[in-house]
Length: 391
Ligand SMILES: *Cc1c(COP(=O)(O)O)cnc(C)c1O
Image (cartoon, rainbow, N blue to C red; front, top):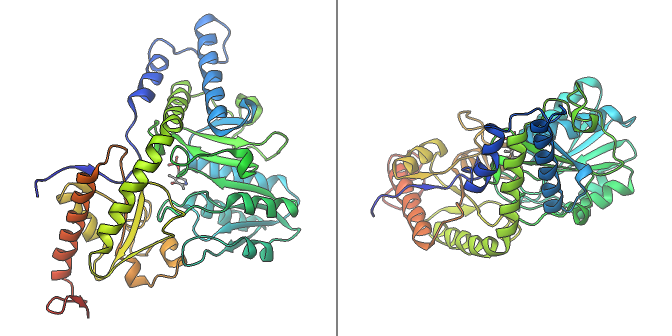
């Protein structure tokens, strides 16, 4: 096989698109005015920022006044959880047990202030059950936070149903849509959420900028106070270039979705089929309710870190567990939540396909994973090479 380079870790981050870069450049060069100042170059920055806000609102089915620029997904998740609890007389927060650390650790950090965190379990397919939420929620629940799409196994959650249950009990509904934005259609009205978080660098925008949708009339405490930017709710001199890059990237992603989604879904399914032909490989997460470009499997008798390094030698960038947890020996909480045993979870592999992947690219990845698994199993004390199965 002739060596190739394939970046298949787009859930960790994506390359900046040409469109996003070009939308940013003027505001990094001559357009340096502070949007709060009153002279002409400042007014131009202000107009660019408000146009970006309008574009984002259109992409999400929201009003421009419901859009707040932030520093990214981590800030948005912190703001939703901490801001909602600080504002409420209620003491409870319900999160799924497969949330990103930005939600999980924000919720746990509030326990020391007397708030109570309850975890909504996922089923074996990685999806929560609305019935479980109904059984768990009560009149002390201030906010429910469940991610729209999972960053490790790609599963998509029934947010609209969960939001309806939250609202029946007077609780707010937040969704971390960081992995979903630009990859599946999002309409905040259809989802019925009060707060939604996205981050530009997961859809070919720049790093360090995100958007918080907060539905009109929903009040949460500020996370960042200061000069009163973003209509008094998120202070700090506006990052005009990044906001413009985010808006351009989101619009490009949303506009190309009808073409990209079916094509990537076909590539993803080809990859899943190929990987499942390798002996003792198992898919993690639901087969259908998953992101178009996300494949996640566990490979028996293979250890994740060795797998990622071997794939890197073969020219494929992939991840095991999640970028934040690799380097630690604990398997990811997501893989344990779907019922995998520790030793099996260690052999996890996540491949998130680039937009320009074709059948040859997919076949190359399958070859690289099969080759890496064979090499690592040959050295593994828990693999019986002569029988071709685990000990
Ligand atoms: C990447 C990611 C985040 C964090 O976003 P940043 O902009 O990198 O801080 C939060 N949630 C999910 C699901 C993510 O994938």
